[in-house]
Structure formats: C-alpha cells, structure tokens
Image (tube, rainbow, N blue to C red):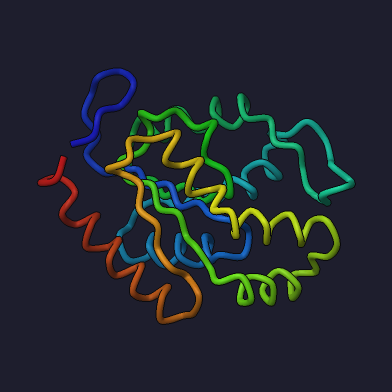
Amino acid sequence: MGQNGSGKKRDRPNILITGTPGTGKTTTSSALAEATNLRHINVGELVKEKNLHDGWDDQFDSYIINEDLVCDELEDLMEEGGNIVDYHGCDFFPERWFDHVVVLQTENSVLYDRLSKRGYTGQKLSNNIECEIFQVLLEEAKESYPEDIVVALKSDCIEDISRNVSTLTDWVRNWSSLS
C-alpha cells in the first residue's frame, strides 16, 4: 500500500495522468475513473472552479496556475488516496502523492490536428507541438518521480486509449499486491 505524508497507508492508489494538451488525458482519466471507481480530478477545471490562479495569461490564452493553492486544495484528498489527477504539468506535485505516473504521448501530426480543432493557433500551438517533440513532460516526470513508477503510453487513437484504460485498470486492481 502507498504511503501518504502522515505515514499512514492508503487503501487506494493515486495516479497522475499527464501529457501535452491534446494527448487524451481527460478522456483517459474519465474512462479510468469509471472503470475503477477512483476519483477523477481535472486540475484545469479545479483551478477555474476554485480560483486557484494568479490571473490570465493573454499570450497563452490560459490561467496562470498558483501551484501552492492547488497543492493546498488537493492535500487531504491525496492523503486519502483513490485519485486520478489529470494535468499537463507534473513537477510541482509532491512526490509522495503518486503511486503511478502516466505520461500520454501522441504522434505530432495527430496532436497538431487535435489542437487545431480546439482552436490552438500561433505560439500556443507551436509551443505544445515542440513540447511533445522534445518529450518535455516525460523528462519532467522522470526528474520529479521515481523512474520505476513513470510509464509512457501511446495515445494516438481510440484503440490506444481503450488499451491504456485496460492496462491501467489491471494495474489498479493489482496495486495492493504491488506496493
């Protein structure tokens, strides 16, 4: 069983699902939450709902997340366990929170199409594509968490997402014997 900050063992695992915008984090997280009865926490939505930000960034057309406020908001839930955290960054979350870190990766042309359909243009589009090309989030995850809990999964199509949800559901079911 996983350890939380207070030294108590969690009954249910915490999973971080990260990746460049457009890689399928929310789709995967929602399906996994449904399959496992874990709680899906979409950090982007949480930031908006609870005003956990320091204003708006016009250049990137997004909120400027206040990482301390987000961590304070999530601390008790994460200690409890049973969470799937869905966010495009990972380096500010405490290492102790997660039992499994999943980095979703998408082929560049597929990602370009997905982001274009969302209305991404200019620097926001090119920065996200470059982030994927250079595997920035995979490197960030490997630097922030023990490498043995970090896994990269391909997320180009619905079949990939279904396979990933199945693989992760099996991992959740076997978690107590793994930890």
